[in-house]
Image 1: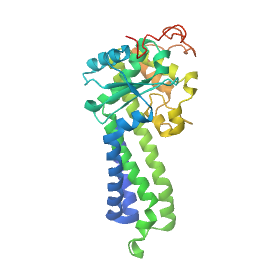
Image 2: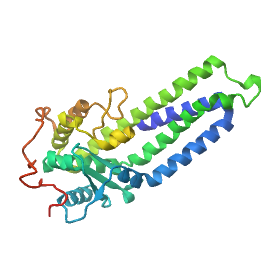
Image 3: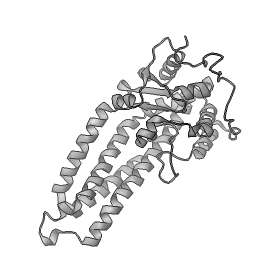
Image 4: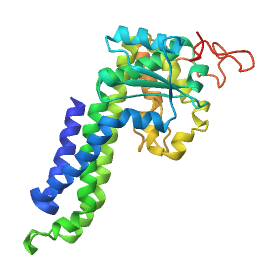
Length: 300
């Protein structure tokens, strides 16, 4: 319901801005171009994202693949493709236009840092995104937000296409050009945060262990969150894909505050928040010199 209301607010903002600057003509042109761009991204998002991260696919002989298969069966989802990303920064994401074309990925840093139950909680969260069709929802949001930004950028051009009576007040036009994209961004972030709470809830239900997911979030958002991530350095927009993204402030984050997500998960479990995670948990992590982690993607 909250997502539907926010989508309605975005649509109303788009229609109002289009009418102000160019009537139906300008609005339709901007919407068609933005929709075309987002449609291409929607159909090719999985390959674009996976190539961006240099992800490598793993097969059924991997313990990690078997874990995802078990979770997908619990969630009654088609088996997604499973990928691993070679980086020490712990994180994971899901991509794909629908459950039948989904892929999930985790970094080697995440697999080495977390216990098996915690990895299961993280991957159940990503399967929750797949089950809730969040990729489709966020593509719809991106289409409308992109159209709003496009109208704002070309607003004065569209506004001068009509006669003098149709032209917007210059001060109002400037205010709309500045404020409308900002408002669209805020609504877009609010929708994204709503979908994250939904994926947390779905992930806890799929894994059956909300406490493990809460513990994983705490570890990922801890000191390890500052480990170098080359993909985010090259393309900061990639951060919003992750279960815990890097952000300069909570106001401009696409995800809710990690502390609030942990509190919601612990409320589902009926217990207190877990103790603060140590920077180098030793429960399942294995020093590289001693061998591979229990969830090393190459371990059989």
